[in-house]
Image (cartoon, rainbow, N blue to C red):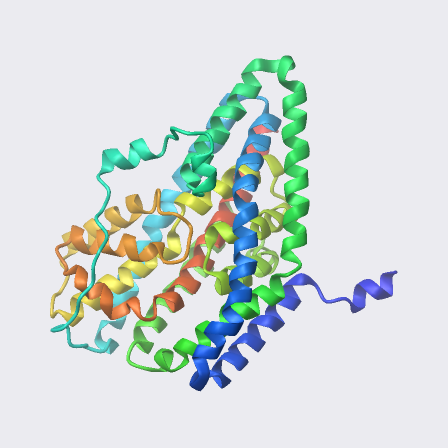
Length: 405
């Protein structure tokens, strides 16, 4: 039995091999990208649909399960406050790194003509509407539309109610635990298809964008990816070591399967099941992880914040505008606050970028400069987002266990 285990490739290794094959096949198929889009991508979409199908019940039940297992509303509040402070703090760090990196690379950025650009930005929702929209008016709608903030609010309300009812609800509490276990098993079955899903999602992207990566936006993409890596290696490593008491090398090693999956799927919410398994292997308590990670997949957007900074500097340079220190501070504040409520789905960063550009008076049409390769930016920023979620789960779990001791 031991020999069979040694021979069998781990899921992380299978996903990595699929990733490498997707890049090779994608580069070979650059002249027939349509075939990749028509016949390979649909299988990737099927896999992503299955992941999205299980995500809503996992978010709802795992948060409820986490709250119920804490048996104390004050403990939930303690974890919630630590989580939100950490997310806002690291997002502010991220946008600062993005702006600094963008400024350092500014001289290398290509100056692209902006005379015939058009981009229709969707209107920003008024702040009070955002607050109102967090609270569901219907039991089914938040789950059918995968409105994650509303699903989280539902989970909080039901979880608190089960605790407050006490012994009368012990069968309900047990039912929540059982249903959560069933959904986790369903997730495991779906994740066995990950290597196929990763290949089918990434291959068409490489086939369509292979030449574009080496083209005019190569320096902008390089700047963003250097900032992504620096943020993970410096900021997360520092907090994991000092607050989490864990070796950063061990952290990134255990995080690797989630990183590969996030890179190929470009979906924070879709990566949630793998992230949950990863942080539990790192020693994070299940009750903390099942509360912190679903929340992070919705409100923690460090990678997206870095992307805002780099792209704002690039778009400003193309229009011959130099951003002032006060404009940069405005970008930091806007991107940090806008990250709350931005859904963890592919392309959400474009909506945030429109808000950031508007806040400092830059032309929103400038988004058209980066829209063509947004998917390439998105893959990297999703990796940063989910790694930030994992670091938070490990750190908050460690802080809570210290407090309990």
